[in-house]
Image (tube, rainbow, N blue to C red; front, side, top):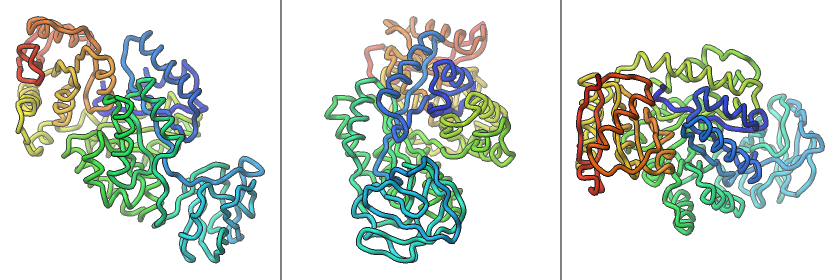
Length: 469
């Protein structure tokens, strides 16, 4: 089983129960629903499919809902796709009109006054670059800098835009309530600009009496980079969304920005996800490019928690094959990693009993070449701590809460298992042995067992090494 997790986005190409089953069995740990392109009825159907498949296959798969966020979009077009020709002039308007090759509308009001002459506007997530050459009160004239076909309702990016759009729309609040009602595991927050945006969503969840959903902040703009340390502290995880980020900052800086965000997030023991165009060529082809394989492998070498597939599985021709290909790249790359050297480089912040036990479990597992760490957890915290130390063996997290177990789907190296409530330490040991045999399909080996003693203690204080023969 791979330690680096995979997130697969469901869309028109994969909105079918058997294809979703293929995504999950192919290696997807989390199924993502992008609410910029789906509606609540579709989301309900996808969640139902995942839960049915989990019951039938006796597995746990996390579900992520991606908010629409304060995005800017192209309005309706006369045709769903419109060709824009290089060097032609196009007008952008705030009026609600049906657009064409000469005039298109933008979704946000009051935006145009904040766009400067000489600045750039990117249409359809960067497919077309426009240069602003003239502007009026509610319309701007732009020169088209490259040939391309754009889609209606697609994303508009405007670098260095100083325009404050309300972070939570009524639709996003509705989606958050839907996520809470349907016990979604993760909400990915689009276009976060600072920690206050994350706290606003957290306030909504508090109002819904929900402390289970984990918040993943998508880093897509310069403002977020400027406040990255506070955003990491306010979030359960971070997603480096390289597509939009590459339009809002210099493209050549993306690798160093990614590396910095990865390091900061891992240091805070939070989830770190790399996204955007991991295997983009597989939307059309059955094989990825060598550059894409290297890109995936490089992220695996960085030991990030998860990699995300977006359009590859949502609208691509080969959704299941794409997942299977990424899984093989991850598996092959992980075989070459030196896990002990990473643990030695970690700053040991064992300032609590749980952290001391977690660090000791990871160190002991590496030292004795253990086959697994089995962790009993009621909140998921100890399993996440052990995961943050990146031990060389898998971490089997057993929990009496299905919600808690599913909420570990994204953490590096964790195999979540939903089990009964234990009543004694002896039962913990026997259940740990059974979970090891069932999940890893092995009859012997060395395991490190972590839990609480007595079981009434609400923190981790117990570690035992067992040799199964």
